[in-house]
Amino acid sequence: MAEAETACAACHVNKSNQVVRPDATPCVQCHEKGFEKTFEEWRSTARTLLAEVRTALAAIKPAALTEEQKVQRAEIETVLAALEQDGSAGVHNHAFAAAFLRDALKKIQSWTKG
Ligand code: HEC
Ligand code: HEC
View 1 (cartoon, rainbow, N blue to C red):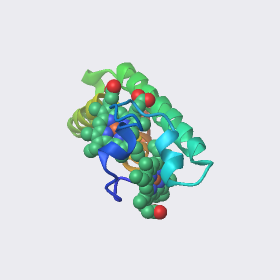
View 2 (view 1 turned 30 degrees about the vertical axis):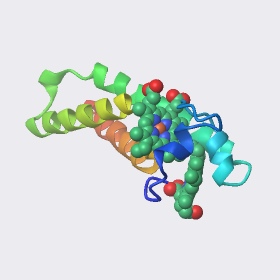
View 3 (view 1 turned 135 degrees about the vertical axis):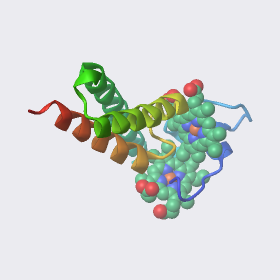
């Protein structure tokens, strides 16, 4: 999707020429029916992962981290903030968002293990 460079307007401008927060409508205009499920999956996966990473980060005691883990934590915070600010719940670049968040979660969990 992101690679296809879909124009913003394809999703963000409706038939009445109003700028909108899209639901799954544009997905099924370009793709066949059934893509509204993909849309829901993308959004719920990304929202769940965002919340899980936030919770995991909050449980970390920064003083217990190694220097390398501190650097990784700062990187995760930066990308996480960008994803949250983007506000599309991973829809704008789902493959990247989901892969990044899963990887971040694994990393954070490994820090708290013995
Ligand atoms: C494939 C469809 C699609 C395309 C293309 C797309 N967006 Fe989005 N965008 C979405 C969806 C879906 C949301 C999340 C709506 C929601 O909150 O449920 C969103 C959310 C946003 C938001 C956040 C809105 C808010 O209220 O927080 C901004 C800003 C935004 N898009 C800008 C852009 C820009 C700029 C482009 C072009 C570079 C673009 N979008 C292209 C689907 C798309
Ligand atoms: C303006 C037309 C357009 C809209 C709107 C659109 N897509 Fe796409 N989509 C494309 C094109 C073009 C491709 C790339 C060509 C291909 O892989 O078939 C693509 C590829 C995909 C792919 C397969 C490749 C990948 O990156 O995973 C999925 C899944 C997908 N779109 C889902 C969605 C969802 C969900 C929405 C609604 C948020 C959406 N699309 C909205 C045109 C569109």
